[in-house]
Amino acid sequence: MGLASVIRKGVAILDKQTTDLQEPVEYHAWEGIGDYGEAEYAAAVMIPAIVEEKQMLRRMADGSEIAQKASITIPRPIRPNGAANRREPVDPRDKFILPNGFTGPILYVNGVIDPSTNAPYSYEIVLG
Picture 1 (cartoon, helix red, strand yellow):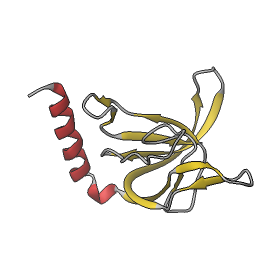
Picture 2 (cartoon, rainbow, N blue to C red):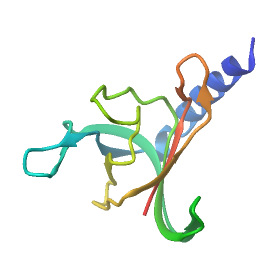
Picture 3 (tube, rainbow, N blue to C red):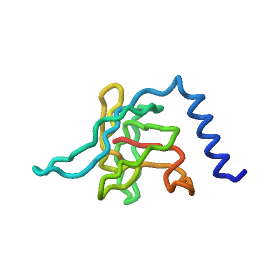
């Protein structure tokens, strides 16, 4: 059993053990820019996730500081959207809406990459 198998099994255990902590988060995948310059999104998908609302300053790669307002942990892979010109499976232009209605720009997406899928085993998505 390789390390990738151990991580996959660990993430599956995390998902199962945190079911009671997970809330449905509304996910809208960015698909492009419409005829009038507005963002277009795919139909909403509800994704169970661990939501942590906390405000703190987050230092970005360019040295600037941005206020982080929430963190979403999704302990499972997310399917790619398939639209052209987007980063898969989570694009920084996507939109997440928390159960309380809060949404904010995606500051960053974090996750350890599964070499068999080239996508994270699980995700941490930070909203500003």
